[in-house]
Image (cartoon, one colour):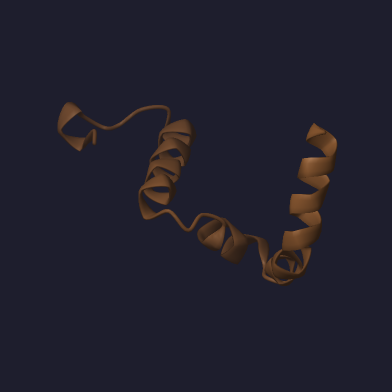
Length: 61
């Protein structure tokens, strides 16, 4: 049942998903999340991962 459910969800969303792939990778990274808080947290994670740490305690969210 699980694969059938997932397959049906993909089929239903496919026409809405395909135009998303037409955008450049940089644009897709920005719009892939419609949740503003989730998007902000993902940016924090990427920044910390790239730098390894925050410059000081005051800079931490």
